[in-house]
Length: 174
Image 1: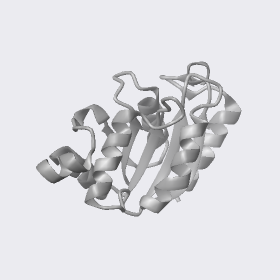
Image 2: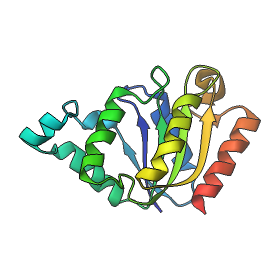
Image 3: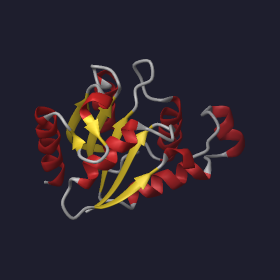
Image 4: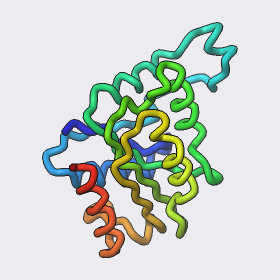
């Protein structure tokens, strides 16, 4: 299985990118593409921008990456209860290419944050909309208190949370 894994953030130290890549690495025999959203430099979406200049190549590149993979593991950063501005902008531009943004690909949808809710608000928003935009949602998982529950060397340190992620990974793996 060829997986596209990314954290929906442009932070160079994104905890969501760490979680997405860790989760993807738990899927046996998966070939994982670690995507850095910082590579997608886009103007802020507006219909005026689209009309005058067309859809930026970065949005087309993102859509091509989605289509060239068998599945997606995404971990959402939560900014004030919603998507990060950079991810939302990329998502908006990509939806102008095709409303089926996620190309009917199986998706493991994650979120984490330093706080105790683990990005639960943004995760719920994505659960409500991603399937309407072509995601085949296989499982979701929220990791609360990232810095207390995750170690770069060993992964999720809390046994109950680790078991919940492993169940989500197994569901994704099919």
